[in-house]
Image (tube, rainbow, N blue to C red):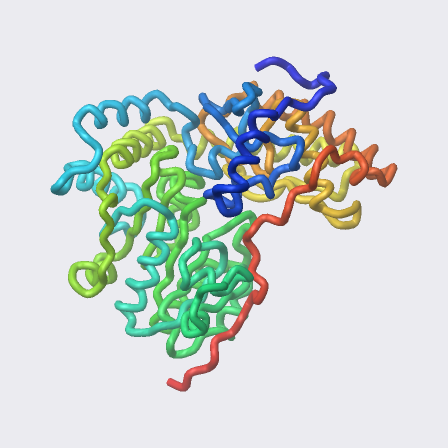
Length: 445
């Protein structure tokens, strides 16, 4: 792409703003996906609508080009318009999309999942991550005969989970009394929350923090001891940290595991997997069916994606480039004496953090974001790596970081970060819950 490191001007976003103005009157909160919404970007500087993507680059509706490190908020493990996947979709499109009976791809993709994902003895398909996490909760309750759930992480918009957050309006109190939160890497908080009515513990195997003191292994043993099902929400870890996800990477096997995002390179598909003895409740006892669960375009995309992830050893590639980016950022920050910012997490998906000692972290993030956008990089504080990111992309991005962090240092030293923002700062990412580490009412066995 054109080197924009010396440009002084921010991109024109007139068409983005025109569409956004219309959306304000038509679409509640203006977005279908919170992490894609204008709240996560510097309003007045960042583009709001993207028109197309190719590889690791995207173009907004005003024609501005960017290197993209959001990658559709995770699904694009291979990249935009990836030829092998797009060809599979086009080929299937010639035969049809959705049919009146089951399609062979349902079996073919299930066989692939069975081979690469540990404990995937049984497989069911749906369309979004919330579908399958909710199905996993229903399966766990049916299998154990218990009702309460402990969770750790973000698990979608459905009642059973969102009841533990601030946005719990419209959910009956009886539902709120059944789900509780525990702290990651704190096995004692889990032990303190267990009573005789806990059906399952569901968690993201990691978000950015690595498990410590054998936390996942301890959790597995704790579930075994108490007749509790362990559910891994692998929306982010699946097919990215390893082909078989966190279960393969850490050697800890869950009773149920849920996947979406990376598995179909942007097509809408989610997967519920688990032990056959647990999943058998779906035969007759638990109702989990959708019209579009067997939609063939997404299944064709998943088949092509999984084969490519395996043949090209994509997780290893993501780790290599992600490590170069993560270590490079930290080296630049260290050399500049910026002890208030760091790149954390795993190589395949890392996060830039800002310490409050240097100022308002959201303002610091907003400053970096607006300066990265000016240099042609779509940036939300994350490095969601894809197979289409190149060594050239990484080199360009590190060069941009060098310039941007130098500018940040000057702004912090002058106490002028807020004054230098060209638009409204970003809002907090919706992930933490307000009543974190809530405990269920103890039930006597």
